[in-house]
Image 1 (cartoon, rainbow, N blue to C red):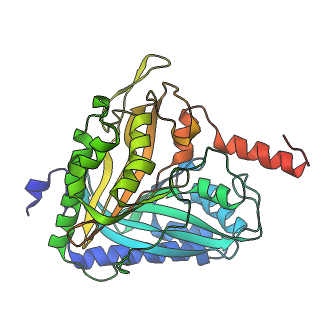
Image 2 (cartoon, helix red, strand yellow):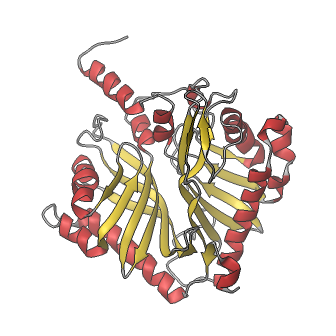
Length: 380
């Protein structure tokens, strides 16, 4: 398939280069964890471009350059988890041309950072126990270095593991994400390029059914179960959501415990359009849409910063929040396994804390208040 037929989307990539990129990122992430504190900034500088951009889940958000990454992200994380290690479940890569015409080589990963929680992190009190920090990451490369890292780390799940829950109960099951059922998520060998292009094509075809569905027609559960998305999902599909939403199984579980509540809460959510805040009646320009669409063997990845824009004006109450009328942007990634002709598994990092902040709910302030009161021996 020629590049002209893929003007905005996944492009073919030479498999030797794709493998080289994946190994480079794997080496970079390992080096960041194993470098001495004195050598940390120099280590980052050896893998990142001078003007590299790092963006991640709230409250970390966005920064530029190795010094900022060290001081804001890596030094505090390593101090809090001194035996920190990285456990990848999925590593895949590819090439993408975005809607601005820029071509990027990319490496995307899912897994968990694991370490003993020895020192408070982001205001979350240390427990002295093992913690699994779930991550979805996309690293964009140019001229042999990382030029941008997007890291959706599940901070809310760390709060949960530390013993505090600041929201209404999740609809799905809160648990550590499983790896691919096929056991082959670490694609550290050359893959079939045509299979990768077919994988991302299947994903985007499924996305099209979601975009075409009319939330305002009020067809409820049956409408979602019977609409064309069912042609793409495996009978034993697994949907691994972030903390605050949880994991679901099968199309019925996906609809009941995620899709229907989400669509009732944010009906008509979309990508790439301006949105009107019903509370202030102001229109916000949106740059929503994908910055990554890649296929690698039997895996595919999409993601946006934000991926989705919406107005919180529905009747649902995801996260226990009543309707606010506020406009929100959603930072989302989707990692897919294509198996037996269908989409078998879907890992979905979402910056839930950032969504809630836009609705007027400051989760990190709740954490500081609750843990601070507990340390003072206060209750109520």
